[in-house]
Length: 152
Length: 102
Image 1 (spheres, each protein chain N blue to C red):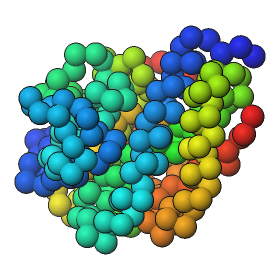
Image 2 (spheres, each protein chain N blue to C red):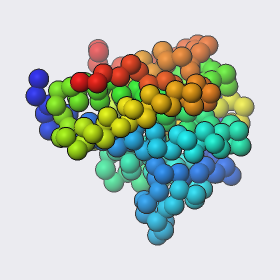
Image 3 (cartoon, helix red, strand yellow):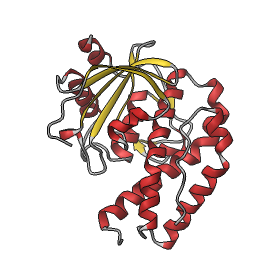
Image 4 (cartoon, each protein chain N blue to C red):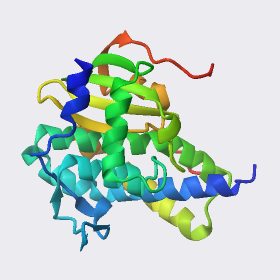
């Protein structure tokens, strides 16, 4: 199952509006406007890697996607089924380690939406594991706990 | 407590990204019913992560991490969030934590 989840990635046929948060950024030799629409992988990359600097400097879009792929397959990652605002998903969470950038956090969380069979996001939650205590997340059932590299 | 350079940098980064998301909120709310479920979930997750950063930002502000210009930006964000409660509730987004106005 994890091989499949790691392989599918973000939906390449979908598009999300860039909006003001990414407007003005240079991307693929263009300056983005708020009305532009990009594939989810690019929106997430530009927000979490480029703007928020959660990943190391110099991380490319391909590096970002490859890192998520490897994290999903990493046996130290935790795995849990969940509902995020009622929609069923599979979450994978691991310490950020080599993926942690200058403004990154301790954990990387990947959410795979069961209904569509694609990743929804991969980011470094400000709250770490406590992110999952927030009320938008429910019905969390751990299939495998994450392994910590050291005691907290 | 005096804010360190790293705390100041983190505070400025948080302020910037929270500001960007808050600025987009009315536009997103207007489009919400026409967005795909994927785009809603994606935006909602990013919104939640910004709201999670607010308490840490508020603490940094209380420690004097922002200069007067940036402090005024922070105050504007807080006021905007206070006025946006109905949108946050309608879209079932994570509400901002109780904000500390130092």
